[in-house]
Image (tube, helix red, strand yellow):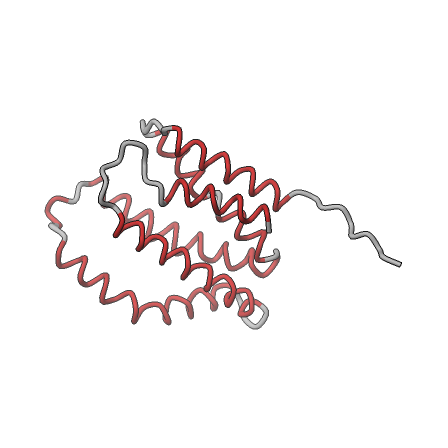
Length: 173
């Protein structure tokens, strides 16, 4: 539990703390991100139970089917408001990557890992996402500031705590 709390604190520092020097006023986006984190946590709890009864592909498919009625209005609202003529080739590539890799690679892998590992272990590994994102962004030229680096370090410490070997429980007389 301590490892999960440390990893979550680091993740939240990176995700919700905003980039160092970022413009204020991102509270709305931060709240949406926080809601997504909560929704995904709920999905992990119920998804683990579903893994015992069905394949990871079926569980992911059902998750998307149940999420669609909630997501479609938001997608429609965003699609109408976006000036599609200003989306660059890089933007289309990023969208394609998110659609393909996140939906057809990451979710099935996540479901598969839920069926094999404890939920806490899977959660700790998921907390590495911001750390990986920082690495990718650094390769692309983003220079992370101290808050982002501190959050990444906290996340790594938490993941190490969760994944590390624990001593066996002491038998009481």
